[in-house]
Length: 514
Image 1: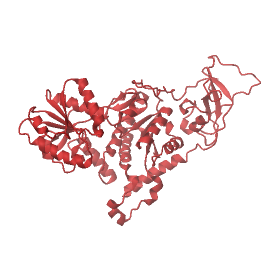
Image 2: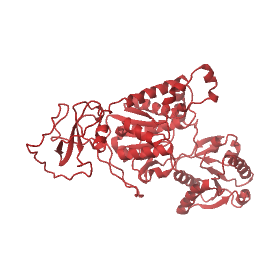
Image 3: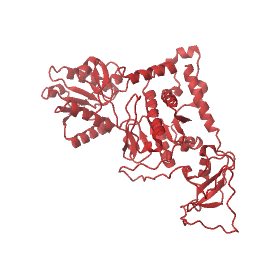
Image 4: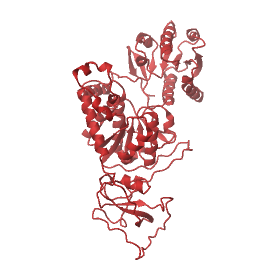
């Protein structure tokens, strides 16, 4: 319990430090302009408490279009910021390439402090302008231009911490003993942060410098997301990791796209988030990706066998069934039959006619009915004396159903996409040992490993490749608990690596990737 409280306090201190950062001083728009590289810019002299973000907002331009000669995160009073001229904050004026001579009667450009060089001599915007993508586009979108990363990578983490309820936590002996009767929402996602922290420490040992900006978004309120995005300098990050509920994440994704920064979704499987947002990074393979991986395994390991797709006709199965039929029709190398269990339970009789078949179950009638169905299905499949089929599922039944018979699964050469720990995998074992050493117990959910993996892969990749990482994100993946390989899917990036496991000696072991 002590380590939970300590971690929460440390994160709260980090969040409070950001919330107290400069940026509350009102910004008065300047009328002074100056020509830079053939374009007109407003010239703004920084006052104490102003930031590039607050200044850009006042001039109604994006923060990455502002030009400075110092680190944008450490502006001082008297520094100069140049912002694109847009008339009355409408369309940007088209200016001649040749600089215009300022009449003597007009006010001269403000003096530049010794901290800044003359903009007329050399001005290169810190960030390249982003490529906008219209909402109507559905075809794949080319990677957008991205900002160059600095020597210190800036990572923002948005997740629910419920810091306003921090004083409710009790560490009394009585409350610890009654832990099962009382829970704190602060701890729901704490293991995700702990996994990220482990990865950052590992990267630090390799010389990677990272500034982690933790932002608390504890309510499913999109307005809170906008507020947090603006007040915590999230738009100035190199990458944003957002573990939020759907509506809040979609809002954060819109804001990240507007700011031109990549946003990482750790847990979503829905492909639509990548369809039109070129700055989207989806770490979990989509259902379509899982089906493709499974069908590849069927075609390779069960070449020539017949595939039976067991379903119930429920609406909850429709999207999976439609995707499976679509892929099978496109492939054409697997013979298949749809079998509606709700209309006929004589699957074993059918399978006797096609020994050595493969069965994939997507049956979903709700938790209680599913449990009964699983028992009945396993009994019928294992009753076959010859030509026992291979069973495939998208969800891991060893975790979904605590009373499932592992012997029956092994007899059926069970294949699935496991989410648990593989104790035959040295990386998994070392991760669990390290986690236990640091935090006193083992992780209770896969969130810890997800945070660890995405941080090693993305932050490590940005350190090695800089901004080019986003155009070619493939690379080193040593030390990850699960494989990651990001590819363009629609407009955004999606992990297309899904590790399939099979039951062997009553444990799930990974099948080589094909």
